[in-house]
Image (cartoon, rainbow, N blue to C red; front, side, top):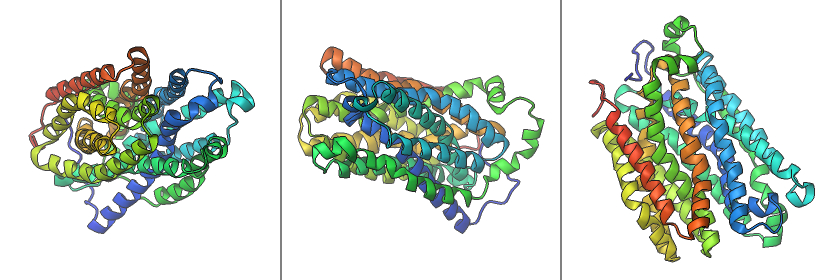
Length: 434
C-alpha cells in the first residue's frame, strides 16, 4: 500500500490548502449537481415524458432508470480516458475537461423534446446525453479527490480527503432543492416546462465551475511523481491492471456497499414513495435534510479515520448498513414524516457517511501516485455499474415482482457483506493508522 506523501515538494501553506479545499468542493459540487439531476428526474418525471404513453408506471420508471444505468456503464470509459490524462498531463487539466462535457450534456437535456413531440428520438437522445454525463463523471471523482488528498498534511489525509466528498453531497442537495422548488409549480406547468429549469441552469454551473478549476494549483504528488511517470511505457490504466490488479478489485469491493445504499436511499426511495403513495415532497425534504447533516458527518468520519484507522471507520458504515437494511424500509412504510426523515438520516448520515467519508483516503492509499488517478477511477467506476447504476433499476424490478421492499433490503445486505469482506483483505501499512 502506498502512502500519499513522497516528501519531495513542500507541503502547501494553510492558506493555499484552504483555497484548494474550497475550490475543489465547489467544483465537485457543481459537476455532481448536473449528474444527480438525471437520477431525481428519472424517479419523478422521465418515465411518463420520455417513454411511450400508457406504459405501466413501474415499467416507465424502470425505463427511466435503465437510462440512469447506461450512464454508469459509460463511467469506466471516462475513468480510463481521464485517468490517463490526469496521470500523464495533470489532475487539473482532466477536471476542466470533465466539467465541460458534463455542463454541455446537462444543458442539452433541458432542451430535449419529449416522447409525445419526437417519438423514439426523444429517449434515444436522452440516453446518448446520459452516456456523455457518465463519461464525464467517470473521470471526475478521482481527480476531485486527489486535488485535495495529494496536497494534504500526511497525518490529516483522512480529514482533508473527506472534504472532497462534500461536493458529492452538495451536488445532490442542489439538484434535490432545484426539483423541490420547481415541483411547487402547478403540475401542468411542472410537467410541460418547469422540469427543464434545473437542467438549463447548468449553463451557470458550467461557467462558475470552469473559472474555479482553472485557478487551482496542480497536485503536489503529481509533480513529485515525474520520475516514476517517465519510467512507465504503458498507458496508466494498463500499468495499474498489470501491477496492481488486487488493489483495483479491493477498490471495487469498497465501493459496493457505499454506492448501492447511496442510490437506493437517494434515487430509488423517491420512486418507491411515488409507487406506494407517499408524498414525494416529504422524501425530497428528508433527503435534503439528511444530505446536509451528512455533510458534517462526512468530515467527522474522515477525521476519525486519521485517529482510529480507515478500515475501522469503514466497517462501522458497512456493518451498520447490513443491520439497517430492513428497518430503513419499515420506517419509510409508516408514511410518517418524522420516521421517514429518521430513516434517511440514519441511512445517509451514519451508514453511508462513514463509508464515503473514509473512502477517498483508504482507496487512494492502495495505489502509487503515478497511476493513482487511473487506479482509483477504474475501481471506483467499474464497481459503480453494479452497485450504483443497476441498483435503482434492480430495486424497481424487485419491487415490481414482489410488491414489497424486502428483496431490496436483502440486496443491500449482500452489498454490505461484500464490502465488509473486502476490508479484511486490505493490509495495513506500518506508517498508516490501523
